[in-house]
Image (cartoon, rainbow, N blue to C red; front, top):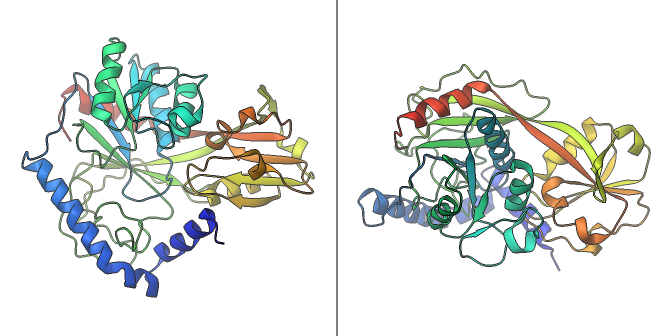
Amino acid sequence: MPTAAGISSVIARHWIRRDAVSLALYPLSLLFRLLVALRRGAYRLGIFSSSRLAVPVVVVGNLTVGGSGKTPLVIALAQELARRGLQPGIVSRGHGGSGTAPRAVRQNGEAADFGDEPLLLARKCGGPVWVGRDRAAAGAALLAAHAQCDLLLLDDGLQHYALARDFEIAVEDARGFGNGFMLPAGPLREPAARPVDARVINTEPAARPVDARVINTEPAVRPVDARVINSGPDDRRASPAAATFSMRLATRRLYRLDDPARDVAAAELAGLRLHAVAGIGNPARFFAQLDALGLACATHAFPDHHVFTPQDVLFDDCDAVLMTEKDAVKCTHFGRTDLYALEVQAEIDPALIELILRRIHGRTPA
């Protein structure tokens, strides 16, 4: 019987290029495109309303399904904005958590209650993190409980139009927009006017603008010049003033889940029988980071937000299991001494912070 990971892998393969499967699904993607356009139009016409909160809202999201590095970017933004004297709060959907009502994320909580990403955000950022299906309500509740917050970061909320925003960031990675089709024939959540390459013909009319694009570069890829201003007619998804910035997920340290305060050198694990698990949107990126550290691992990809069980990380001929921090928050209670997490840090250009501060100063809505 096919596993969820196997099914996800098969689907993702057909999102890379236009083949018989993606073309067969194309009529459904046209229907999805229509529904997206109708929903967007309903907000523009005032049929659906957007709530504006008392503080500026910065949205970090992407146009595609799958992890492009949104959560590490939110962590980096929260930490840097705090260093600049602001007191940001964070709002997230709480995918994988129980319940839908707005609620605060406890740092010592469980991923099953709040979701893996919100729990990681709460532990990394220090400031208040709230989750809820209605993110406008969650944001209002956060501000009511934490009056000192003067800015909200919305994790993965580019398509959550019910909450008005002052600055939008679209995150992309090396995978780009795949075959250029919308769901389910391709990875796009909403139309993107920029072709992936010369073979992709996209006649989509101008889409709504974003304020900044952040390109999550692979370790072997030269970082995008943060001075590049994207104003070309081939990328209408970004506004004429939308700057393109680079971001790199730099390896920070390895640590054992039962002793997170102690750093573990990669050399201590080299030569051992290693397995690596990843329940994230782009497992290949994590596996490549381990390879760059000189750690040869048997790799095991799971669906994004996978709820790990002790059996999932039980392997024959295994000395240690390596995972991302996002997965680690779901495995800390397993009571194992051979589970390790790789901590990464998003390196971003300071010019992105400056642009955010300039834009939200005037509260110009996105």
